[in-house]
Length: 285
Image (cartoon, rainbow, N blue to C red):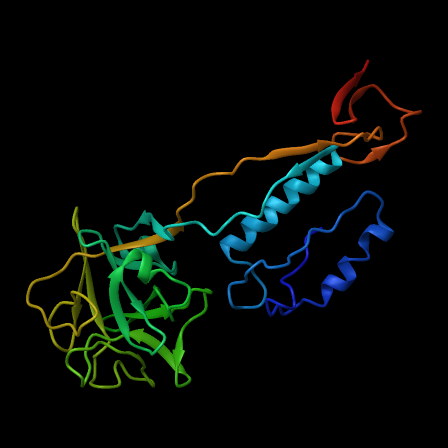
């Protein structure tokens, strides 16, 4: 039984772990998988992908121990190189409500929100960092076009000053495209300042045309370019290097008998079938 997000990681239900700790006293042959140092997504409830990898490793280690193998398995390190493109979309309908990244694959750069509420445009390793305010977007259909709602790395919708945060292609500061709460209008600076005409060009990608400036977005600057830039709208995944080496630290001389579900059974009263004893399978005809 796995613990919930720990108190140290600011888990919303960390106190349930005190109950989980008592389960082995009530259910024979049950075990607790600790969530110590497993990072969470920011909502207090769900682990990050790295957190799930750590928990999975700990489950495997305990399962092997039940089978009589005291394995040396270290918690997996954070994947190096960070994130990469997973799935590319070719239509807005296919995206639906799925959070996606906006990347220029030719430059290998992505648009993201920094911690000071500005947009930036940088290489993937810098753009897709959890320290950033946001690097994912959601489509929001409105009359005449789309708003691009920003999503935090934890999966929640980004807000500023208590209002929704959007990709805004026009600002009073001409050389910066701010993430602004829209306060029931299509742009705080000017009407339609955050409203986009988004078109997909087969084999090239999506273009982002601002309905106020009538210009195209190219990077983190305001939409002010005559020629379109083609972006990929895509989901992301962590780069991984596979499962590390599992070392058998020592064989445990455990002569208890277990069925294939891992339950300990009475070796004096066994029905025909497969069992595990001393880390080995035995067949009773």
